[in-house]
Amino acid sequence: MSVSTPAEPITVLTAGMDERKLALFRMAFRLHSLHRYRLASDHPATPQVAIVDVDSASGWQVWQQYRQQYPALPALIVTAYPSDNAPALQMVKPVRMEKLFPLLRQLLAAPGQEASAATPPAAPAVAIAAPVVPPVASPPPQPAPAQAVPPSLAMPGAAPSVVRSGQRRTLQRFHPAGTIYGLLVAAARQKQPQQLHCEQRLFATVDPVQGQVALYTTLSSVQQLCELNGLRLGAEALSGQSGEEPMLRLPLSTLLWQVALWSCRGRLLAGIDPDTPLRLRQWPNLTRLAPLPGALRIAGLWSRTPTSLRVAVSLLKMEPGPLCNFIAASHALGLLEQVGKANEAASAATRPATPAPAPLPPARQSLLSRLLGRIKNL
Image (cartoon, rainbow, N blue to C red; front, side, top):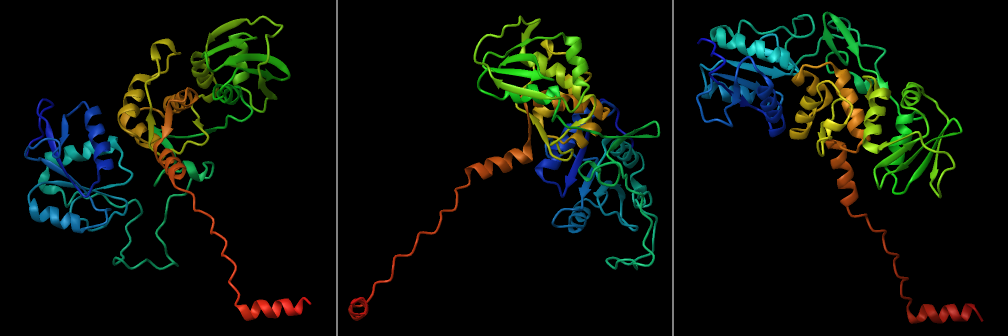
C-alpha cells in the first residue's frame, strides 16, 4: 500500500477509545498539515490504517476482536504498558502527536512489517513471563526522575518538559500570592470599587462594575513591580474620591492581561494541573490586548475542545511558555476553567445536603411506671 498524497484523505479506524480520546485525535488530525487524516467514525470510507487502544476495560480483547474483523488492515497499538511480543507496532502513552504521524506513515508505507517493527518498551528488555513480576533483587533499570520538579508537574514517563534540540525544559510554577497580579485579580473579583495599596502607597483604584482602573504610577513602574514577590499589599473598599490625581486610566481587562504577561513569564499558574482539561468560556478580545505569540491558535483549541496543557503542547507544537502565559492572562479575565474541577464543584454545589437525623421521641411510659415515679418523688 502506498502512502496517500496530501490531497487524498487517509481514513483512520479506531478501537477501544471513548469520545474524549476520539476528540483529541480528531483535533490532532485537523491541525496536521502534511497529510489529511480523518476518523472512520466521521466518514464512512474504507479505512487505510487503524489505531487500537488496549488500555480500556476490555484490554487485549479489543485487539483480538479488531484483528478478527480486519485481518489485513495495518494497525498501531497505543498502550501505557508495552509488551515485548506485541503483535503490531506500539506507541507508548502518553501519545505525542509528533511521534504519532511518523508511525502512521511507517505503517502506510510498509503495512506487512507492522509486527516486526514493534517499538521496544521504555525500560530495557528483560525476559519475564507476564504477568509474573521480575524479582525484587534485579529490577529493570528505570530512568531517574527529575528531582527539581514537584509531583504535580511530572509528565508520565518523562519530565514535565518539551525536548527541543536535545535540551529538557522544565515547567516552573508562578504563585500569585504577594504579587501585583494576585492583587489585581482579587480586586477584579469584587462587586464594588476597591482602593489598592502597594508598599503602603496608593497604587490603583479598581472599579470592576464599570471595568475601569485608575493607576497612580506609570506602566514602567507596574512592569518592575510585576517582577517582585512578597510585596506588602492591601485593598479596601473605595469610600470617596482620592486626593491624588491618577496618572493613567485604562480598561481593567487590558491591565489584567498585560500584568499577567509581565508576571507569569512562561511559568505555570499555581492551582492549574497540567493534566486537567482546560476550556475557554469565550474568546478574549485579542485585537485590544497585548500581543501574545500563538494566541489565536491557543484560543481556537481551548474554545472548541477541552484540552490539558500537556496535550496542547503536543497538538500545537509550541513551547509551554506561551501557553502558560495565555493560561495566566485568560484566568485573570475570568475566561478559563478547569473542566474536571468545575464539574466537581458544580456537583458538590447541587448535591443535597444530608439532613441531620431527627431526635427520637421519648419512649412512652406505661401507667405503672408513671405511678412508681410519682411515689418516688413524694
